[in-house]
Length: 346
Image 1 (tube, rainbow, N blue to C red):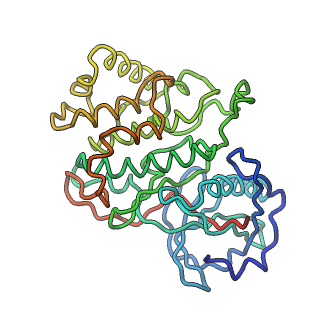
Image 2: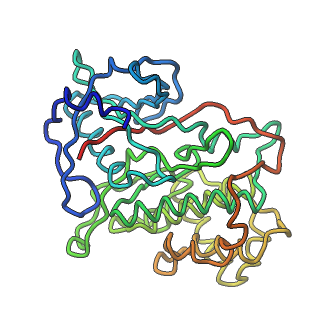
């Protein structure tokens, strides 16, 4: 373990408690010092924080370090510990970014997540030149297999991500590893006993990946919101374009309603006429069935991550080791990241 040698000199984080996941198992999260890391370059900057590439001074390991933005020391620490708990609940899964450490700036009290360094975001990979890149069906299947396995692990641990999108998916330089990252909006799933208590947030996640139930104003949603977002990601892999073209929630809800109506009237042929697909005739029936299952407008009809993985489409090309090349011009993975990874001591 990268930080094993430093563990003895860390102090427990104030308020560190139960890990996300609903199991009741408590994780003792200890804090090291940000000065154990040397900043190399900025990887990404978003509304929730800044991510930099850094090197651990003792081991030389390259890591990604995420700092919460615009929060006081106490609130920032709570946010970091919440994300760390969600990452810890998925620890060890190859399709969820790995946690390395939780550290603090002794002078300011600011807290940071330290995560494994993976590579470019999927969003960067999809930004082909001169035109948006799209994946072959085999490449999309290899990526979706990993992403659904990561979602299956999160949901099995009682975690809902709530902001899955290409920006929050990392791809290793060779394409062998595809990992879900940035669990800053993740939350423990409501238990059956607490099902009547809605989540407090009215709007969560990114508009073009937001599920129909969220768009309709429901706050008692479940893991299906992540499955819907993965359906939008799958469509983007196959087409190089957003599944939906919308600027407001009203526009998005109208487009989602159109999709539900088209699938109900035309079945899988609805994709032939959908603007983003432009009638991709080479798309197999199996791929269409998976996509329709992920994008079922009624969440009660939507596939779970585990059920989607059992579809025969994923048995094809099981030997695929990487997402491979895109159909467009070759895209060299640029270094970028929107997630972080940290070390939690149980």
